[in-house]
Amino acid sequence: MISRFRRFKNDLRTGWAQVRQGTAKAADQSLEEMELLRLKFQLYKVEDQIKEHLRAAGERAFQLIERKGSGVLEDKEIQDLFAKVDQLKQEEARIRFEMDQIKERG
Image 1 (cartoon, rainbow, N blue to C red):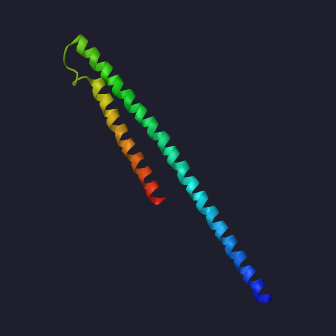
Image 2 (cartoon, helix red, strand yellow):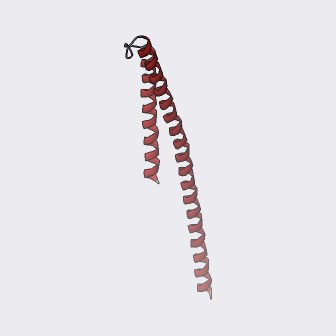
Image 3 (cartoon, rainbow, N blue to C red):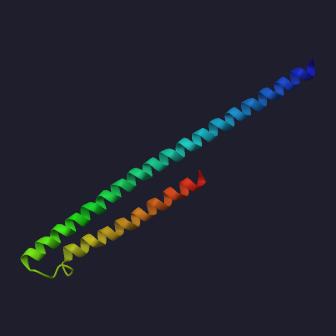
């Protein structure tokens, strides 16, 4: 009788330990998913900014071509826009790297 009680008690402890472990694992996974979503939204924001800057550079280039006919690459505003695009692409690469790191851990 006592051995059955001990076995039951032991099984109960083991079961509760597994439940706690499963709960902790589920919480970790949900935190990883939340972090991935946050990074994904940041990535969308950066991609939109890149598109916006490229569109602005294209419009400026078109205006310069209509007025002068050349000198597009020497324009300071276009150079600034492309510098911002390069900076945003580096940010995009950093975000993608962070996302890959999180996916590898999970």
